[in-house]
Amino acid sequence: MSTWRSYKLWAVPLVAGVLAFGALPAVTGSAGAATPGSVRDDFDGDGYQDLAVGAPNATVSGKQEAGHVVVMYGGKHGLDKTRRTVISRATTGIPGAAATGEGFGVQLSKGDLDGDGRTDLIVGHTSSVRDAVVVWGGRRGLSGGVSVPAAITRAGDFDGDGKQDLALFRTGRSQVDDPYGTTATVWTGPLSRSGRPAAAKAFGSDDFRYYDVLDAAAGDVNGDGRDDLALTYYIGDGGYGSAFYLASASGSASGGVFTSAAAPEGTGEAAFGDVNDDGYDDLVRGDEDRSTITVALGSAAGLSPEATWKTYSQNTPGVPGGKESVDLFGASVSAGDINGDGYDDVAVGAPGEELGYDDGAGVVDVLYGGPGGLTGKGAQGFSQDTAGVPGAVESGDDFGAAVRLLDINGNGYADLAVSAAHENSGDGAVWSLRGRPAGIVTDAAFAFGGKTVGAPYAKAAFGYAVN
Image 1 (cartoon, rainbow, N blue to C red):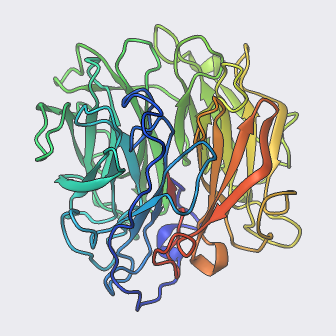
Image 2 (cartoon, rainbow, N blue to C red):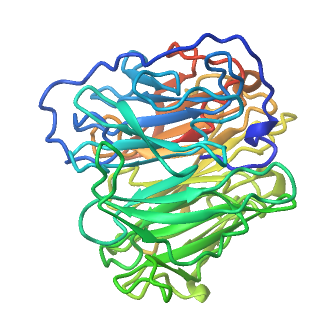
C-alpha cells in the first residue's frame, strides 16, 4: 500500500451520492488450468496470480469514505475488466454495514487461511473499533466473509508448520499528534470459515503499543520455514517509523511468537524478496523521507550485519532520475522476478517526483537483482510520459503511490502493477505493465479505474492499496 504524505488518505476530497453496490460476478478462467494451491496470490485456483486494489475513499451506500476493494483476476492474456469482483460492506456475505470514514480497503493482505488451496483476501480499514474481513477464495473467485478482530493484518507461516497464520493488529489511524496505539496477537492456521483459529498466541514484542501500525510485510530471512515481519507505523507529531521481528521456535522472552531484531529503518513500505538467489529472503525497506531504499540480505543467521546493508537512490549509478527529498522514492516497494533470471527484482515508487513543472506527477523505478544483490545496472524508469503508458503527466497524480509485482499471465515473469491514487482529481487509477526477459515493457499496458470496472469511482482513491 502507499504511504502517507502529501497523498495520504485523508488528503483526498470527498463527494457523496454514489449508490450502494454488491459483488460483480467474476468470470473464471479455463477449468483445470492449474491444481489449486500450486500458485500463491491466486484467489480462484486457476493458476494465475490475481491483483487486489483498495479504493478506501469510495462512497458506498451513501456513506463517504466507506471504501471498497476491486479484485482483478489474472489469466493467459493478463488482466481483463470483465473478470473482476467488487467487495464492500454492502456486498452480500460480507459482515458489517458501510460506515462513513471507515476506509475499507486501505490495507490488504493475502493468504490461504483455511487451507483449501486457494488464496483468501483480508481487507483492513482505518477504524479503531471495527473488524477486518477475511473474504474466502473459491473456484469462482472471492465470496463470503468473516470478521477478525483487527484493523491491519498480515498473513504468513509464522510457526513453520506449513499452514498460513494471521498477525492481527487492533489499531486506528490518527490524523493528529497522538496515535491510538496498537495491540497485536497471532492466530495460527488453519482458520475455520466461522472465524476460529487453530490457536491464538501472544505476538511477543510490544514495541508498537504507543504507535499506529499501518502496514506489515512477511518473509523468511533465515530460511527456518517461519515468516518474519516488518512493520511500518505512525509515531505521532507527523512522524513515521518501522520495526522488524524474527519468528522462531522458541519465540520471545515473554513467550510470544516474535522477537524484535535490528533491521534497516525507514518511513516507507517494506518488502521481502531474494535479490541474490541464495535461498534466503532479503529485506527491502523504503525511506520516503530520505528518498532511498535499503537492502539487508538474509542468511542462516538472520539479516546481515548493518555494515553490509546497501542503500540505493536515484543517484545510484544506472537508476533513472536524480535524488531529491520531495521525490518520496521508497514510499512504495515490491519484489519479484521480472525477467525470469532467478533473482528477485525491486519496483520502487517515487510518487512525489516532479516532471517538468508538474509537482507530484510521480515515477516508478525498477532495479534488478543479480549474484551480488540489487544493482542500478539496467534499471528502468516509468511515468505517464513513458511511451506506451496510457495517460498523461499531471501535477499531484502520485504515479507510484503503490506498486506490486505479480505474474498475472502465468508466463514466469513478474508483471508490474502501479497506481496513481490521485489520478483524475482523486478518482485514482492502476496500470498493469508486463514483465519479460528484457524487463518491464509497455506494449501490452492496461490502465483501469473504478469506472472501468463498474464500481463507485468519484474521489475514491482507487489504488491507494494494491496487493
